[in-house]
Image (cartoon, rainbow, N blue to C red; front, side):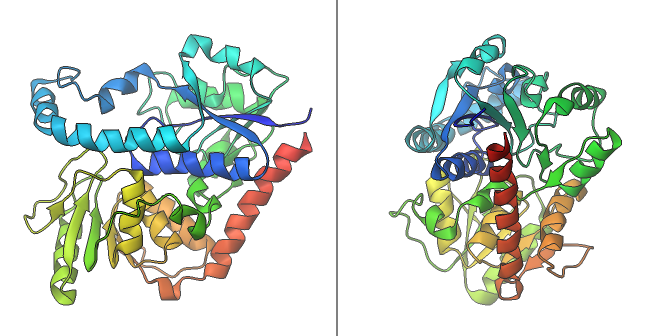
Length: 357
């Protein structure tokens, strides 16, 4: 069967820079290679409250108060996300879980990934992200799917055994994902995150040209980290730089009043700030990834599972780093030839699979 129409199921709906931009990258890469691509607009109901603006769509009194306090900030920033998605992603109509099967008439191939689509810490039912709704005569593949951590639930284990043997090709983003699948006798390839599938020149086209900043550190924390606070303040003092802090849902993860928290940063503005910054201080994988793409110095700290994700990438490009403590990236020491080779290998594996059927 000739593959032309491709449906991607991922977390494109999340108000998260990495989630939106990885969806864009995979979709655009395939479109640039002459495939007709759409993002499947499936939004698991259990995740609606996670990003809801409504303070009363909350699980506790404290959460109600927190959402109420951030309402106007979030409303402004969420609008930037929504406009970016509308203008840059080709998406199906809204589809509920019970209607996903109807999409078999619209697509020749279904791709799950990237992002943590196989992490059921977020999901009551992860089976749609294992392409449970896809007919047997259609192609099912994963691109850079992630389990999020090394410990998987019984439900994920059962979904692996039930659905992945039906896939034409399985690829994952982390080495521990390969190991998890090996235990279930599922062969898989390690590939790079989709954001690397687009070149720097291509990413420049998605920036907001009206964002003009200079002499600053970009401070992007998904969770509070006192050590990163201290590092950002220390570098700012030494280099006479400002600190601009961002968060996709307008949370303030810093304990310092020296950080200028911005609440007007959608995906385009995020890319512009990456372009303009002198240094990135983060515990976000995708901020780290864009730091590599834009050739910026990065200071990264994170949990063990998150650090494993970073280390897998650095090991692939032979970058020397300390296994204890923070990871410091000097772009002048990055072997970009090896990074390009890793990107090209990942591209070839994906395109070869699509052409092999």
